[in-house]
Length: 372
Ligand SMILES: Nc1ncnc2c1ncn2[C@@H]1O[C@H](COP(=O)(O)OP(=O)(O)O)[C@@H](O)[C@H]1O
Ligand SMILES: [Mg+2]
Image (cartoon, rainbow, N blue to C red; front, side, top):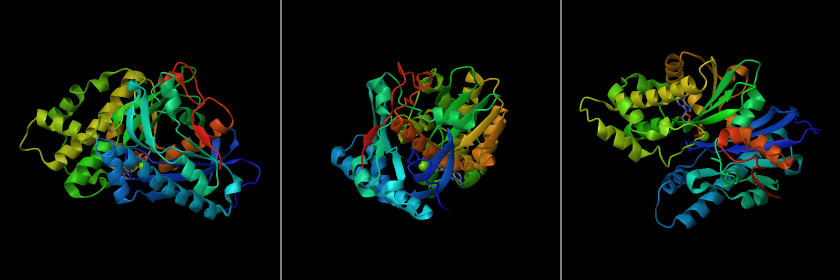
């Protein structure tokens, strides 16, 4: 496929909390905000790099050097994905206006004024010969916001119609966007998406994720445990704006819940089924509380491929739950496209921060530019 020579081209690079890999997409925006996808590539995160990033989520020895080295390795992976995109369409780096590179979140603590996305944008600019926009979250936090989620503005650009809709991104953490104009755009994290499901599945079966939720389907939700997870965590009850990460929803969090409801009869599959219900119920409760009249929920992110979770979301929420792929938008590319879009907003000097979502005192231009 040959990309157009008129429209500016942007690359979006996303590596989310799941740490499964990176998703890369090359897009133009010929109709204002609606992207045309020219190429995409997904690369698995090498096991060693994943281990390093997982370790960096917790305090540990020699963090600064570990993070710096991991940043360069991630940038190398990003560069490889960019080269793959260019090969697909037979273009050169000079044809691309900018890359939006999210980096790998290893800490997220807006209340204390910081979030850390490990990245090496200077190295990426050098390796690709393309301008890089990175560090999208810190300015919003500096302006008093959560720095997250940043995708609702793009969800609105892409999916807003003349009736209310919600967009749910099921990544490691789940975030919900509510499109209900003329009401202000709202969006917030609802809690764990895949992160606990992946963690438990990996530990007990050796598989990185529960393919289509089949393992969970062989167990039964432990309602007492589900209740303990929800009632025992004040974060679920907080009003938006709110965001979260592995800082909160980690192995220790899971263990505290398990220990609070001892049950020798509970199998590993039962725990998986309960964690699947936790994701579905917390999303359903957020919809009930913040979007009671929204009937249609579009779902993107890798969790949309978990048919068991999708079915449970539909039954728990009593709403129509539709993967974005039904609208010809691949579920695994929405976030990557969002970072291409955010790069475009930066290049055009537009403030892409949305105070009604993040709680910032004003919209700010997001990201920092590393010229090629
Ligand atoms: N076939 C599948 N069945 C169940 N879950 C899946 C499937 N494919 C992907 N996933 C889930 O999607 C996750 C990746 O989703 P992604 O949107 O990339 O999240 P993140 O943005 O956090 O990286 C995987 O870790 C896994 O939990
Ligand atoms: Mg991912």
